[in-house]
Each structure stands twice: as C-alpha cells, then as structure tokens.
Length: 510
Image (cartoon, rainbow, N blue to C red):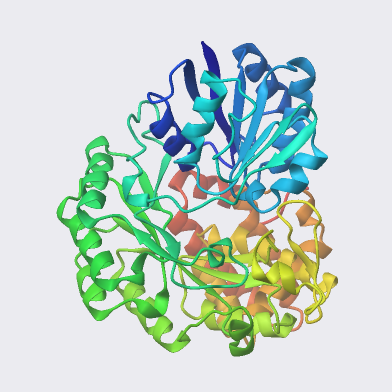
C-alpha cells in the first residue's frame, strides 16, 4: 500500500490551501492501493522542522502545491529530502510551475513529476498510474504531465480545462480548521485580460450553478467558520448572479461568518448597492483593485476602468458603515513614473478606504507583460516573486523609495489608530497625501527607525517627533499634533495602556 502526501507551505497559519483540498476530494477514495494524507505547513516553519516531519512520514510520494511565496523553499526542501529518501517520488504542481515546468524539471533532477494546469481530472489518473501499473506507457494520456524515466524527460500534450461543474465541493471536513480562512471559488476564469495577471492567459468564465453555490456556502455557515474568501477573480462580473449570492448570504447570515470578495469597482450596480445597505456590519468585506488611475497605464495593461464611477460606488459603500473596504494599487506599471504613481495614490487615498495596499508589479511567468520586458525596459528579480526592479518610466531608486513609503504607510494608515493625526498632517500641512507620507518615510528612515520593530505606543511617539521636527518650519504643528495624537491614543487603546503611556511621556526610548 503506497503512502502519498499532499502538502504545501502557506504564507500564514490562518491560510488554507484550496487546490490540495480539491485534489484530495477527487482522489483520496477513488485511487485504490494508496493511503493519501493532506498536511499544510507554513513559510514560518523552519526547514529542519518540515524536513523532519516529511522524513518521519515515510512517504512513497510527496506532492507539493507551488506558488511564488513558497517555490524556492520547496525546491530547497525537496533537494535535501531526496538525498535522504531517494526512492520517494516528488510531484510539483500549481501556478508557479505550470508556466516554467520544462525549465524546472531540467534544472532540478530530484523532481520526478510536474503536473501543469488544473489537476482535478489529471491528478487521479496520475495516482492510478503510479499505484496500479508499472508499464512504460503508464503515463500516456495524462495531459499536462512532465515526468522523468531512467534519466530522460518526457513531456505530454498541453493540459486542458476541466468541467468545473463536475468538480466536487472540497470541504468534506473542517475539523480543526474553523479558525482558518476558508478559500472558495464560485467560478473560474476572468472576463478581463490584464497583462500582468495569470488569469489573462485563460479565456472566459466558468461558473458553478447558483444552487450548487448556495448549497456549498450553507456548509460554511453551518460550521460557523470565521472567514470565507472568494477567490473568484471578478465576483461581480455577472450582476444578477453576484447579487443573488449576496442576498442569499444575508438571508442565511449566522451572525459571525465574514465573506470576502474581489469586485470590479465600476461594475457595482445600484441594485447591489441598495441591497448592501441592509447587510449586517461585518458580514461582507470587499477588495477592489484600482491598480492605477493613469489612462495610458490602464490601456497598456489592457485594463478598463471608469474611475469616476468606481469612486462614487466606493464612497457610497463607505458611507454605509457596514462593509470593510480594501483598495489596491500597483507600482511599476508601464507609463507611470514616480509622480504618476503619486497621483494615483492621491486619487485613491481621497476615497479613504479602510485599507490601501501599495503593491509592486510582479512579472509572472506566462503573463503577457513578461513578454514585454524589452519594450518597457523592465528589470526584475530573477527568482519568485519576480518583483519589478525598474523600467523605462521609474528607476530602481524611485521604486526603493516607494518601498519606504509603503512600509511607513502600513505602520500608520493600514494599522489604524492614527486617523485624526494623519488627517491633520496629510490634509492640513501638505499639498497632498502622498507628499506627507513621502516626507514621513524619509524622516523615519533618516532617523534609522526602520532597523527595529516598534510597539504601537512608540509609533505615536515617532509621529510626535516628526511633528516636533516639522514645527521648526511650521510653528504650532507640535502642539496641534499632540492634541490629535492624544485623541487617537484614547480612542484606540485600553485605558490602562493610555495611563502608562501618559506616565512615561512622549520621549522615545532608544
């Protein structure tokens, strides 16, 4: 009886891997002659710990789900594991190996199989071939498979799309996982073709029947999971369908589960907005990718967006006070220099989302923008996550400076608890919000505060120190800022913490 492990390294403990659950659901009971286990590690686990756990498992085959955040760790782990257990077969799958499978299997001789694309139909076939036969032709007909036999590499025909409606609900059991984020997809594919996204490679959208979706979601509600994160690329691509799902979740609300969706901001309908006003606070969480407000940039990345419509919809949702809003920007896109990004930042910042993520372009294998490296003079990191270093519009030093802004912005704006102080500094003392955060980042780094982590109380003290420095050129800032800082501290911290803060004073401990 073969022993097979499905595993990965998640980016956080609270995350879970949807792909592995799909593969387990379609193969655990169907494949004879094998015992199949599913176990998820995180990138925070040490190599020694993971290596030891794998070795103690005495597996005949280990299957890894690979992404940009774990591929380098997985390749390193597998290389060392194979030295200790030469007979164990190693399979890699997932988006990070799909588009460079031939290169990986050539460079890494300890990898026995790579399965490209969707695996719900091909993975069970591979498991059957591995466990039930040992013929030279045993892997024929498994599309998307690359494999090594007697030192030679074989490449089967390209993978094909699965019939998503036939893929079973993957959550057979949530024992010990109710505290984790559950990932769910009601459709595959995306109606858009943004050049930086792997979804642009696949054409069309494949939705599950609406009644199937409702039945699936009822399971999460019954189990009282903390959060369900839809991985649909554009949840509201079909207004009637998405509105019906939201209405169902409102009707079946268990009072505790939160649902996260990625929306196209300018496609949100009046019907949906009217419905959302009645939702329980905390039931829904929306993420809207703006990426840029520069028209030339949006055209270059094949992305359409009516920013005026998006802004009106975001303002309406924000005014409801019952939905957490998360907006995204991407630095390093074509035709957007440092000041162009600053303009995009300022326009989105004016919407005052609860969280504003400043991301950096990743030139992912297989994406159209990866083929435009010469056209836009891109340089990028050679290993995952392939993050941009520079292009013809923005220099490496400017992107590094934006990294500084991102760091400080996350500490203050996205962390929360500094609202009045930030509003005063950004709106009253600077021509625009980006000018403030840019200056604060320079101050923060010149003082060397980036070299260590800081308690929230010390972040207030650092901001006060910045105000004291600013007071030299704009008299009165120090005392005005102190008043706003006190209000923020009293509103966001426990009384005993506030008391200890005031007792210690505003001086920052070294």
